[in-house]
Image (cartoon, rainbow, N blue to C red):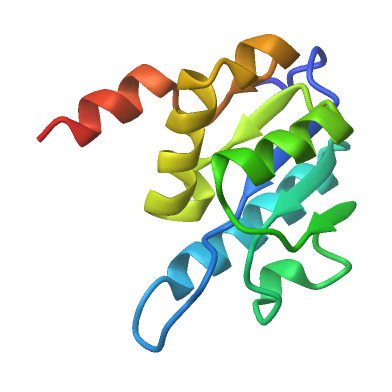
Length: 129
């Protein structure tokens, strides 16, 4: 798939708190996603509420916000950073739920943020079980 030149800045939602035996795979995959996106030349902004993860290392993203992963907190980051795209699925259920809340609140459309990696309709279908 060719690199998208219409996207310059991508907001990645992290997985938040990690407990022993749970969610470390999201920290790893999110870290790899950030590094891959940076290597492709995208500006990467990360929101993760857990400062004790590899993902929040200062070298992983161009800017890191250690904030609660809630629609209100992430909306403030979107308002400030104005990303072109949102990559929520590296944060597992936490990121997916937040993306849906942002969409339902009208934040994504207000700031013209495209959800990449999946779309909100596929998240909704997956959650309707």
